[in-house]
Image (cartoon, rainbow, N blue to C red; front, top):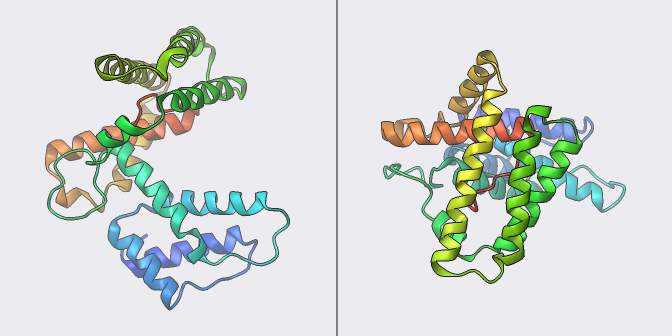
Length: 239
């Protein structure tokens, strides 16, 4: 598929049609301008799809649907998913020339986000992933150890400040790296290669504006996100 806005809009229109059970809602006029803007920002198609999925999931929870959804209603969710993706991968939302490092708001978010709530979400996802059979038996010992550490951390996280909080955040990053290594070790070379190609495709619209080092870091971050997605693993690092 091409990367021009018209191609991007066509794919979004097709996906929206499937989500609306075959009802064709054209992406034209203001809707075309909206979706073209997503393409110009470099939002990967898969990320846009995930935003649309999130919008429809919320719509389903409200009860029986009464009318097909227009793409305009999905804008906030698409942008939220894109923001989560770019922070996880390490690129800025702006496509200007300053692509040299991770997204510049992640540090501030790590200072202000609720650490106890984050730890609770991580523990719930670890439990759900293992119960759902997405993690093989080789993960059991590591998951048990990580979960035990997180339970201890959650008990005191609400009151930690300064250097103690920074030490806990660093420990979460180390545990996240350990989970990532275990997950990659459980995959064969072919599957890892497929994830690497998918990650490169996600980053294609940003590559020309990034330094080689920044792109390498972003690529590893994109692969890590896809590995987590495959195994249902949470992100332990507080982004």
